[in-house]
Length: 402
Image (cartoon, rainbow, N blue to C red; front, side):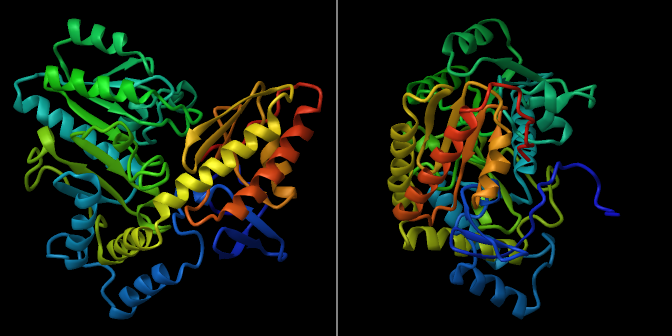
């Protein structure tokens, strides 16, 4: 009997070794990883620069001291994050939902400082911001929220990619102080809004003195071929939340502020016991430095095109295939039916991926994936999808997104 709480529908595979974009299970079977721990393992597995940085921190004996003291490695990590975001201040935490919790607190405190008694934040249908009560309330999935009521108040939900809906809220709701958006929705099905839409949001926020807060936990940190999706749109937000790929597999998150949000927090307003400890920040520095040195943003753009073009070519005309969408190495393959069975079918063929929003195959491989490995991914997945779609249409069981 396992004493691990039953909160995940786990697949019957345990990985024990990894190298690059490859994993091996307990029996020695080899798998091509197109999931990266759900967009976490930026540098893949066993990268020597990341291993060296973590090893040196462990060898020093100082993996944690607390934020009561100066942490030089935290300063170094913050400098690098400020450089790539173009923003000014970094609060370190441990996960994406904690980064979004911090963003929500920034927005509320910003609103109160402006004299708004009950600050509200615009959020979006199909969004996913985390599983704490506040981030769960900001999330746009009733399936995820069900059973955890009463939800936290203070969120106004609108459709994605609809500026008129945002303008309508601005015209009638004087309590709104911020917009919180995933520039590409991950759990919602790899939904990519128009870049003109993101620019329009920036303009509306500017006119109303709202904060523009971008949740780049899954889509940020080089995955789309730029450091952040907002850079594709040529805009600068006030708050950015980061996690997942930030530490290359080590748990770390960050809430980054600038522009209107600079200086909102002061000592005592927020904190995290483990946030930004030397071990996590050593991983951040090594990950970001390696991404620059190995030109992994350019690689993500290049290999992402290979995969998207290959999947489109291989699946076009196949009954049940809807579309391929995404940017860089954040790719969704939508089918016209629930396709959870594709997860286990792919595992049988040595391919790791998952399904989100019931009918969207999610591909978020490590950014070190080569073009040749991208073509292997395409060949494996096209074969699996065609076999799946050749079956009589039926509701396939859903694999949990995580």
